[in-house]
Image (cartoon, rainbow over all chains, first blue to last red; front, side):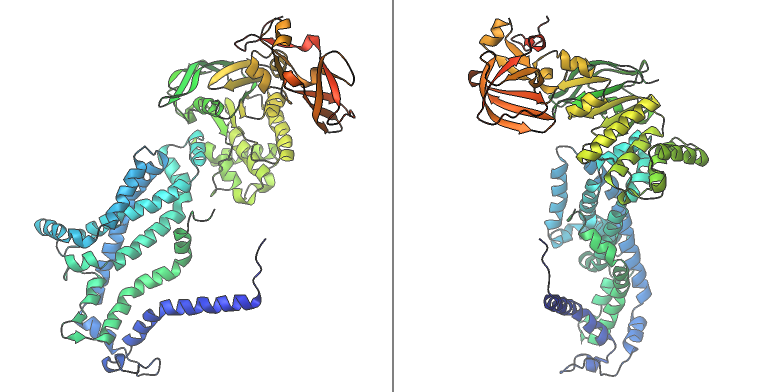
Length: 276
Length: 335
């Protein structure tokens, strides 16, 4: 029997949801507001919420001091590049594990996941030395490489779960219909896997965009993405809240917009397979 | 043409032998049903013929040509899957025409053939719908349409009706049979439902434990089962088996009598005595489940209504001409 919610219950839960949503969103809102304040107002106590002197001077200073576009371009190249390469490796890997599993498939999957349990700092020194030896420090290619490897286990896992959901019968029907492996991939599998591929791509983009450990440790200026750009505003001479906020707002804006437009896809992707 | 011959076909998955050497001759244009309990290897045998599994030994000949190394699409067969296996992102038109598209036919020709197939199956109004917008029966017809449009040498059906409700299943059973006769294409049909097997088949293959127990027309199987397994599997309700003294009297280890070949007498002194434990009154038939003491439970069928009830004593007299005799190994004895 379906439970009928009363109007009152609906009102209470809606209010609770809004409150909870607001709490989660508040730090971001506060950051955006702070980015339009002067440095003095930014750490004034009591803080002013909306009624302060709105200014865009922080943005001008930030752009002047450090080249936003340069870092944004690095972020796009690093996040985009690592995601694309990860997908290129993960699609065939997940495909073969989902459709022709062996006795060891489960072990391999778990082993891949186990690499994510290791704290990255544990391998910082060896990785740093490798990067130094091969001249990859502060290079985009080096960061693409390390982020791609870092996210690969998750990408393979996600794709594996999506591919698993595709009924084998349909692929066999395509084979009976005379589709070669290539055409089976193009006409049957890919169209069916698009939601899964899209949400994997999105999630990985976001993870790579926000990744701060390796990017901070392995880049300084040339290859530095937006994470390094933000970090450069927490300087030894003290915190400049307003400028830091402006830098952060600039850094998260692209991914926020992307996330906003792909909400539906992302939610569907994250809950895919959970409910039949 | 669609003559299919199996010669010593074997299949094992690791150490497990699924098919232990199958020999079979399927004539062109005939409707052959593979029937047997779950796990008997009927679906595996069908998939071997389709080419979706590789044989571990033996030959599969289609029109005299060994096809064991030929990929599925090149064997000229088409298959209808239990789950329908429609392409969810394509319209009905796309689904039916996919095989033709893969074969590289011109667009006009694909459209013409798809529309002809759709008309045969009453699918014309649904050509531009997606599979999710169709009912179970319509999806099933699309799956059949996809199979017929390619004009294959043979159709392979893998329990195609098991996802439908009972009424629709009977209707589709008739439709499939009629369509096959009309097209005259060889068909191999896998089912665990012996009623489907009896009603649809020209010939039935009874499989058990990876072996072909008997191959023959439905009535041959009913009247002359080769062994205890076939005798017990074909016919509903099941054949009654009696061992011991009554069997020995007739020179057999086991004798079998079908429920419809037991004459029911209310107060008779002869035959097998027993007490009714359950009586089922269907109007058209009456089924009696009789506890016959040392003989065990016997089932008797009476055509029409018989007012007997649980607890009544009856005597069951087997029709002497309809007694099946089996030796100790379970094989039928002649005469």
